[in-house]
Structure formats: structure tokens, C-alpha cells
Image (cartoon, rainbow, N blue to C red; front, top):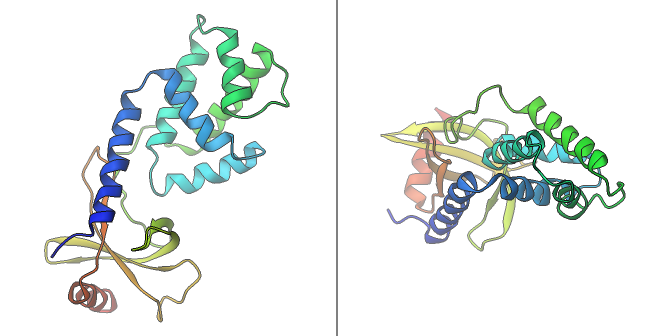
Length: 209
């Protein structure tokens, strides 16, 4: 069976970005997290909601963000201007005073939020894989993002598959989408949309048995 080339390319791009992020300097890790999770949200409550959602799919940016922030806050040599820039420019919290104390206070709250939800020790990406009842943002064949809810995970032969439906669709009526996935310790979850109708039929039969 031929894998969906668009899905394969998307995964390879994601994998490359995650590997580069894990090797990045502390400042870049912190900036990447703040731009992705803090800047688009108006308050820490919204940041927390986005963090909780990310935990069910890809926690690498959360761990690298935490590592970067903790490193910068613990280093007494970190310039005050750098901390202020992180908060006012990267996190877009321009309503806060442009002082090191205000910056440390805000970044400390972000660290506390991450520590609240991340496990004591990092879990290997891909070990948890798809989880029943979790919702994922995945691309349809045209490349458009869609929110799909996982309703089952099954093994067919030597391969693992996840069965998903649109977030609010019926588990009995679908429409159903099937993903083949591979969980490898220490690596991001590897997955691809199944387009072969025969494979989809076998997976759905296994899920209903």
C-alpha cells in the first residue's frame, strides 16, 4: 500500500522541527514556546487550556519551553533586557511594566503552569500514541485541518491503527477516518492517514468485533 505522501511529508517536517528545537539554545526554546502559547492568548487561563490540549498529542514544545525558561530564570547572568523582551515582545504582554521584576514574575507563573501539568519526568513522545476520547487536529486529504476524536485503537496483523470521527460525530455512524501509527520510544508519534479502502474496512471490522 502507498502511504499518503502529503501526510508523510508533514510528519517528516514536524519531526525535523522537533529535533531542531530539542537541540536549540535555552533562549530559542523559551522564545518558541512564548510565541506559540502565550502570544496568541490574552491570559494565563487560555495558555493553560492550550497546554492541556497539547499534552494529548505532542508535548515536546512544552518540555523544551520549560527547559528554556527555567535555564534563563536560574542564570543570574541573563540580562534584564532579555527577560523584558521575552515577556513584552515574544509573549506579547505589553501591558506589563518593562522591568526585570515584572518579567520574572510573569515567566515564573508560566513555569508554574507548565510544572502543574507536565509529569515529574518526561514521557517519551510516541509512547502514549493515540488515546481514546482525545481530540486531535489532523489534516484532511486537501491539507485542511480538522478536529477528529479517537474512538478506538486496534491492532491488525503487526500494525497499529487508530479509528477517529469528527469531534462531535456519532461513534456508530461516523464518518470514520483511520490512521496507521507507530510508537517508538524517544521519538514523536509516527502516523499516516490510511487511504486504502480495503485496509480501512479490515480495521473497522476489527474495531467492531
